[in-house]
Amino acid sequence: MDLTARAIEGSRQDFYIANERVAPKSGRYIPSYDPTNAEPWYEVADAGAEDVDTAVQAAKKAFADPAWRRLTQTDRGKLLRRLADLVAEHADELAAIETRDNGKLLKEMHAQLRAAPDSYLYFAGMADKLQGDTVPVNKLDMLNFTLREPIGVVGMISPWNSPLMLLTGTLAPCLAIGNTVVVKPSEHTSASTLALAELIARAGFPAGVFNVVTGNGATAGEALTQHRDVVKIAFTGSTATGRRIAANAASRLVSCQMELGGKSPHVVFGDVDLDRAVNGVVAGVFAAAGQTCIAGSRCFVEAGVYEAFVERLVERTQRIRIGHPTDPETELGPLALAAQLDKVEQYVGYGIADGARLAIGGRRPQREALAKGWYYEPTVLADARNDMRFMRDEIFGPVVGVVPFRDETELMALANDTNYGLAAGIWTRDIDRAMRFARNVDAGTVWINTYRSAAFMSPSGGFKESGYGKRGGFEVMREFSRLKNVVVDYSGATQDPFVIRLR
Ligand code: NDP
Image 1 (cartoon, rainbow, N blue to C red):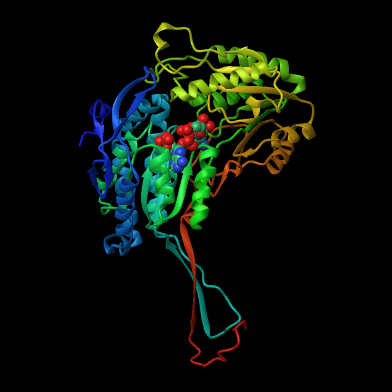
Image 2: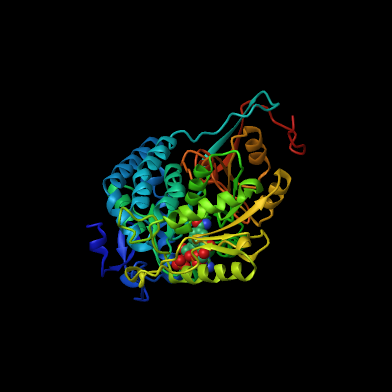
């Protein structure tokens, strides 16, 4: 099967269940739009609860099937390595599909997709390293040990901003552990996940190990998170949806791994090379047109360099090249959805109404060539306050608020005065200060003199309303496996049946 964007253009994309294309029971399809011209470019099957059930049953069957269940961990690792090779082979095609779907820069999606094989390789290497412990207990004729086991069918709901990179972070470990998966990608960006399903089948994973149902969050997503045979949910998306999914999961007493929104503080002290810090702040909030959960959208600058910093930030922002995401010169493409554009405009309006100073941006680009797409200029709102509405809510667009601070005490109060706790960044040459910040800030990831530097080897995940549970590193292997304690009595003795054996 051809995995290029050209092959997808104008097509109807069915679900991928048990290594086969399956049409929706309702016969309904929904359009997916190209953000550069707001035109539909393919249709995706719209799942109802029955379709979701078919996928979950396939995953449940595969979990019990010896073809997967009895596969050795070494062989699971080999399958993942084969998948890594296939993803590497098709990385450019997958990147092109994602750019067409979400409007993110082709060079950014290339970077993500070319790194994806390394992630599969990393977790392929983990497949045979998930081990339990022998527990020394005060019973000399007993063996007490733990087993790490797969958990069953994992439901994954992935967002539109980086579909495969975010999915890989939980999918690769789940396959390494021996779980089976049903994923519901965002209705706006389903094509790359369906293409990945094809590669997973080609790699030789047994039917039902990986399944894709597509459609609306409120129907397909809801049916997946409420399904009684889904034992864990991995969700990346907004805090509002995360809260709803967590409530569904709680009613069935299943756990979740939640990577939700952010409103990350990005701090600049006066002792740094200001141009380097400006570059970092630009990377933190304008890369991906601000559509990243880790966006450093609240920028705090030491009062002594505040004016100079804002001036340079505006100057650099002015030079950002807005354009078509496939043009290698482009630095800022369109927003992924019309709704995102509306949201960004609304929040910039709130900022100005609340008294922030529009230093640059604050409108759609005026160029005729961009008129049909969902483009928005990178926007700096200076002289902001942390209590302004646009500084409280996640916007998910190219908008940064800049606030001066006097000292570290004030800075820490401002930085932590947010409902979120996903990431934070600081630019300073003072290592003591940097370490105090790292210790005291409520954020799952802290960057010192860098920003937006990610690695699948390191555990990431937020605090507070940014979610819970980790992805990355060995932590994610614990997150998606279960720990069982086994006790063996080899004393041959008969114990008093009415007394618990504590010694
Ligand atoms: P959502 O949180 O609504 O969507 C994320 C995923 O959840 C999508 O696959 C969506 O499907 C699905 N979904 C939606 N409702 C439900 C539900 N009731 N049950 C199960 N799944 C559901 O984000 P949006 O796409 O609407 O974006 C809105 C905001 O979310 C953004 O402005 C941004 O603030 C934030 N966001 C954060 C992300 C992050 O990386 N932390 C990623 C994406 C968004 P569908 O798209 O088909 O509705």
